[in-house]
Image 1 (spheres, one colour):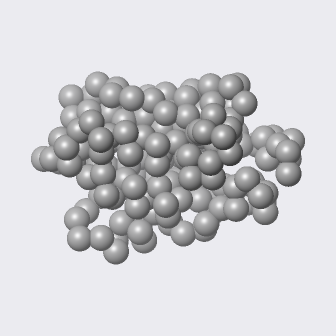
Image 2 (cartoon, rainbow, N blue to C red):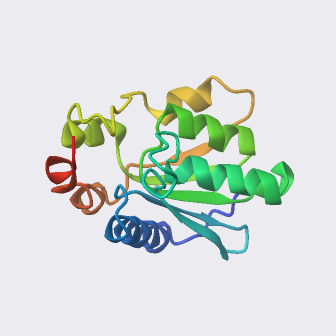
Image 3 (cartoon, one colour):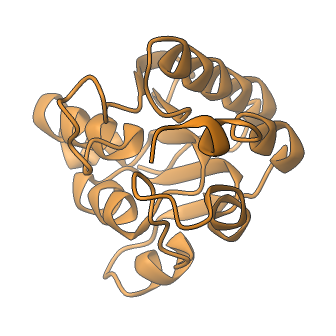
Length: 166
């Protein structure tokens, strides 16, 4: 099963942006992801969980969402799903997406752009490793679309890291 080609990527991506805004409003890092099923149904939304998970540096929105999906859905079903992320998943999150079996990723801000925005912030020591490289090392394909709406996505980060506690 492959992910359907006719999804409105910009609409779903903006929903991931809204999830990132809610995460920030709730005291967390401004990242969000949503999982969309083969029929276009939003299966779950997930914000970053750094603060909500007690300072867990691995509680990225994409990793939490991929872990949830892997527990409740099989890889065969997930191959037809699309994960929308406000920013390009880091190497850890790309690995989680790959291992869960999710078939497509659409992201906003690139990892390179995110690294420029966060600098050397201790809460986000960004890995500048494109997710495409992580996926290319695997034995099955994950379709990647992005960066998409990058300026809009980058705006989610624009003033956060300078004001976040170091």
